Length: 413
View 1 (cartoon, rainbow, N blue to C red):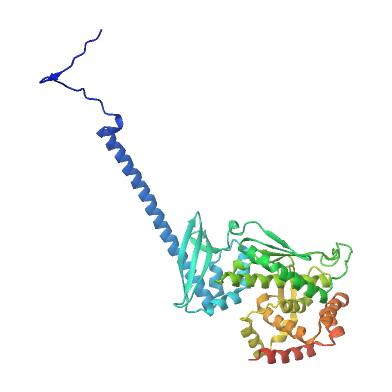
View 2 (tube, rainbow, N blue to C red; view 1 turned 60 degrees about the horizontal axis):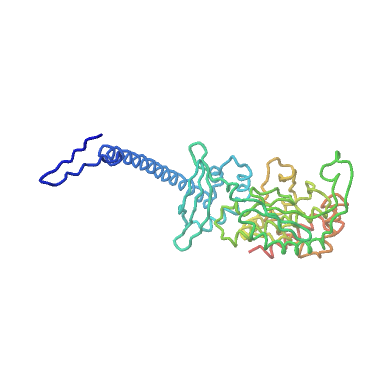
């Protein structure tokens, strides 16, 4: 039996005080406040450091971009290559091969200056929205950079940019594209099928050839002609591959989506033209001394002319050196080009302007039947010069004379 005490004051009952929960005690509240303030301080420090790191990365990348653009505008190929991520050899190779085209685009905008308009920073990698402006016009592109040691280097788009390849098939060929190339490739496939029909009517596939595979890897064991496969490859392809051609997404020019689609179409047409000529020739690649003629016809049929080539052609007309194209030798699957008797490698871009004009001269001077017979004769007679003599009845001197007159008439300025 317990005893209960009720206190009264002037007749009123005094209420008992209830105890406060622990979280409402002043001591605990002070501790909680200290913890919250400490967390905010840590978060603030982390944010400040992140912003400081972001600002530093942005400043470093802006310097790299400014140097790249200046190198392109002023024709300093060595400075551009130094800004590229050299761990991706095909990426560097692409820009070496396309230096003249990219430099011409920026030289035409010599007063424009770049600036960063957006930056997404990841571990050792950055996705950068770049704008180029001359005060009246602005061009935009997305570039990717990777950290290499203590410096940022311009890198190709990462794997997630490309995604899976999608195949677009027609009756005689298939075209595979990735990333942003997929949509224009879908529209391009019917056009390529039409071009194939035109080319195949002139350059019929050679019959299948069988032999000893150990004798000659280029000719000994050729399968019957089948479907032609074309692929827009993220790192580009070899100069005579019927499988790959470079994606326009690699280009440094700040092209619009339509301009990149046009470049995709140009690359696909050229790859298709080469593939059809190889099928007609019955080889996996041209012989060393036949490259210049087959490349000339391929460029012409693909309508692969570039506006910036005009100046290069005019220089060779002025110097009288255009005939050197006929001495180009090509070796390997890339291929690697050389002047006959010279050991120094030669870039394709240095001879393609002339090669196009030679293809244009042949294509406008001779009938489709004669051009088809010319390629068949290369297959049976063993060389371009023998075929030119037997089919078109031209020697080197007469070919150069006719071509020179054509150059002067069409490109002499």
